[in-house]
Length: 84
Image 1: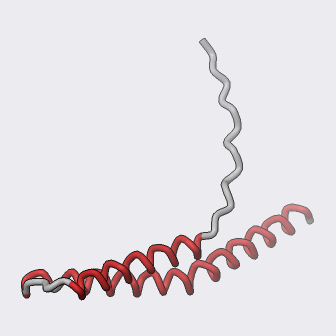
Image 2 (image 1 turned 180 degrees about the vertical axis):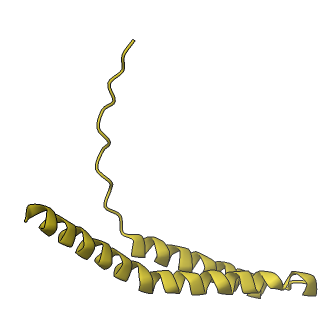
């Protein structure tokens, strides 16, 4: 029995910056909740986990547009070389 494979669908366009923003907001909410709780001294490291998540999210909001622009530029250059 022979199965022919259908072609892959094109990738979906997503707003990756919005995803990073949502994650950053979620970490900020988690930090706010933890600050409202009276955490024992042994569990205060969770505050730093939230701070780390916020910092990584802010970095992603800065980096992702540059990454996508570089990929678009590289794809355009590749297409131009193939057309020539």
